[in-house]
Length: 101
Image (cartoon, rainbow, N blue to C red; front, side, top):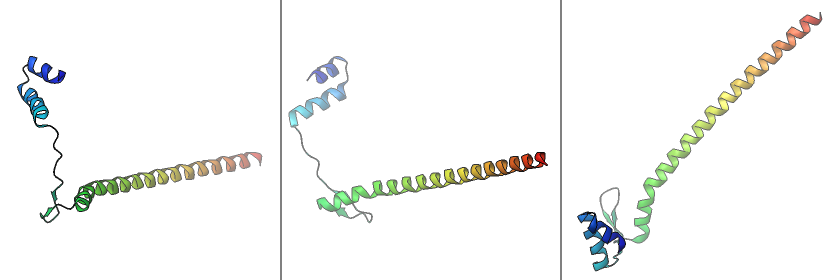
């Protein structure tokens, strides 16, 4: 109610009437329907939920693929650094051996 009064005093007409209609008409649940990939109307609750889940599953799979690629790249960089470190260590050891001779 306070939000409605506030909208009325601030001259936010659309917001005001939206609140009035919500109070006047009450809550009405949305009808659970959607269209499948072919454009056919889907009304079965289970199939509607499956249809809504499809795009999110695709996004999740894409995100996982990206994470795997990043992990592989990080692993490759670490291997390169490790190899470079081993080469430096070998070089230092060889230099030390030469100085002992």
